[in-house]
Image 1 (spheres, rainbow, N blue to C red):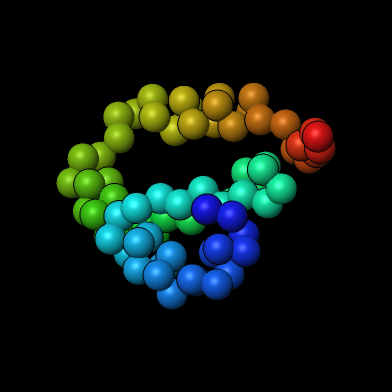
Image 2 (image 1 turned 120 degrees about the vertical axis):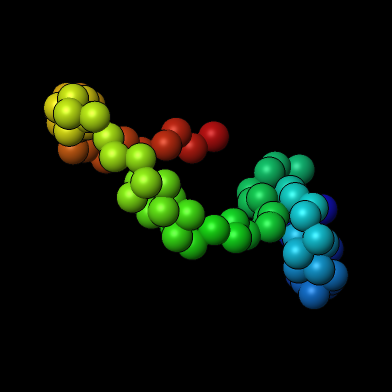
Length: 80
């Protein structure tokens, strides 16, 4: 859908997203946005799983090891 079409029929676009459709918005033939249904979870299910299934003793060490591999730098996306 072009940006102009999205602008003119925004309510219909939101209705489509609400019903599970994902819409790609283009401008000048280039993809500029993807509009789709919002996630419905709020984290309560994840909290429940984490409470019921406690991580093993090595889990904290695994997390620390993975975090040590992360870089604290911002990488700019290339612009075409």
